[in-house]
Length: 199
Image 1 (cartoon, one colour):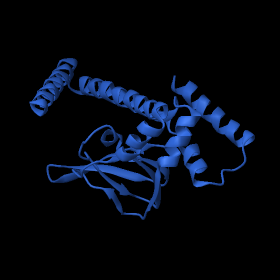
Image 2: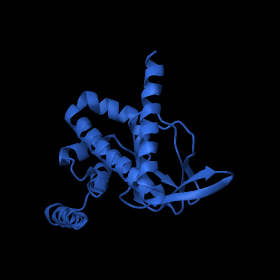
Image 3: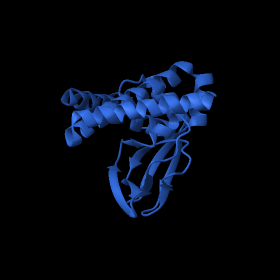
Image 4: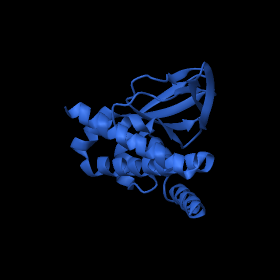
């Protein structure tokens, strides 16, 4: 399956190079970047176009922080160029969670709700990113409801896959029983929090 997706992405890239001239606008450039992000590979070209139109290009110098752990989250970022380190503090130590390079996204959870950042995002090199925030998604929901739904479904598939993979990782490390217990506790806590919010 990963090989098929890689072949599809390469084919799309070659087709765009043969069928179209070099992008000469910011929107076309960002749309081409979005087309290379695996999370959005199922999205229609029209969806990527309207998303690109709503995105906010930003640049950061090496060592500059894009956001801090525990900050209120407003949306996601797509890396166009450079490397971003995602790290978190734990027991008075900072550990690296992962690196985000070109055509990857980070911060997606906060696009789907009012969640605080779980990590600090810091530019390792000179970085160019494009931001897409909750107000942008809300605006698209009014003006382009099909595109907004397409984006939300792509992100929900991505987050569901992350969730399932997290349970598998915990199961491999600590045993399936521990993984399922964590799942049950998280589900119960989420339901209790929802009930408290409604009450």
